[in-house]
Image 1 (cartoon, one colour):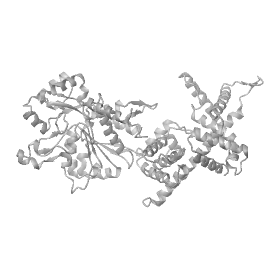
Image 2 (tube, helix red, strand yellow):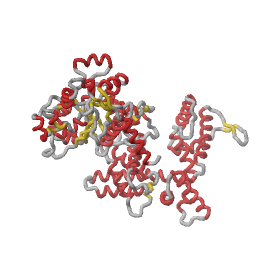
Image 3 (spheres, helix red, strand yellow):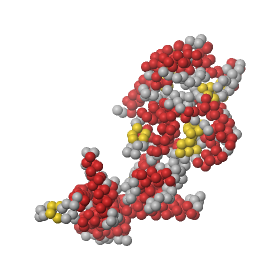
Image 4 (cartoon, one colour):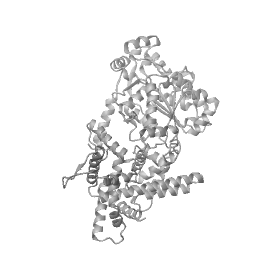
Length: 632
């Protein structure tokens, strides 16, 4: 389909979304589908739920609505959805609270709110998210407000829908003058929420308190019509175009809310608790909207220290939005930000972003109190990787040590700025992990606001990230040198498992060549186990653990594979690499390689390019760098 055809399809879709009828027609729609009359909070929760929910092995609920934009905040998002959106959707008291997202700079607060806005725009275009309003209402009002208070209980009994709120002054006047009170004839239309068109989505950003007007929130008198209508209390002489008016039926975002002048926040007291606000010379105006704000911790502490803010504070639900603490998810953040740029032509070598992510996450972690655990072990445990002597339960215990972990450290914005610096260097066609670390280090040295003590700590983290990259580089090259690596690893694993099974069951093995019965090969088993530090005293427990894992897989009808046990996988790989180390060392470090060595280097380079995501530039740089590492 070419673009012009796509434009035609878009217009057809817009036409399909248009619907107009009378209030009597709308009542039939409500009878067939009561969901169209849901509250703003319920609509947002249904929108999130409609995108899909997954539950992991630890019982955590993963909401797919936030995929592709927010990474590594599964627990924070689960808490947000369950404790706020779900509860508010059920009309619990939580819906009468302002949602305040609190977290460090560049932690994803604004992204989260933007996702809710864009999500509402898409959701109200679907049959499940269909939304209707009184035609001509400046606040896109719920048509059910037309039903008199005296008949609402009867309506609930028949339709099963609760009605909250009253007609805005403009609609009340319209019903009385244009329809002479015949509410069943009032025009109703389908609406699609849109921030650009100011339908159901509002945004308020504080500016200079001396120049900013409360009219930005609640609308203002239209002085040009005062002489025509004769009174400031005539709805026709008032512009219902404030952000609170326009956000009705959807979402209202307060950017940097706690920086607002007090008079702007007072209006929220009544809006949150009673669902209405005061504007002009009118009675209280009903509004059904979710109010979300965001701030950082320093501003929040200052806000709650002021006793005058107690009333507003009690009407807030504070949700922490910390930095991501998972290396793999940090990489996804950087990949997303790089994709949004025009520098896709510059190749980023494998592990470059991961090395930067290791550095970033280290700056956000707090020194563990648990004995035998350092920051690096904590980092890998949080990343879901196997760490010797530690389990998932230990990760949970470590998280409980510091409930505020992730609320400080370097933000992704700083790191991506430094990655950008590396990307735009003149004549750069490819950057690797060393280029990224160099750019990060240069940035820290130029950063005047970082104290000497913090600078030393951060430079130490760069050294740690460099050492981790050194290991990744050696592993990558050694893997490329192993022909049919996976097959070799599987063969070695099968051999190891045969010997372990015989050892644990006090049996002998049959030699495949001579057919004689022989004892389990202790030398082979130890040569593998020693690669990951399994001591002589711990070998029996490790071998029994392997057999238990195999048994568990068998009971579940699953096959135990090479990757089924992280520690065993690591031991097998290291054993293969150890056997090959001298070959790698000689081949990569030779300044004048012979024909055989040159052939091997070319094969490895091709494998790095074809199978591991390298380009010719970074593949050759990796081989040279690994050669220097192995010669140290």
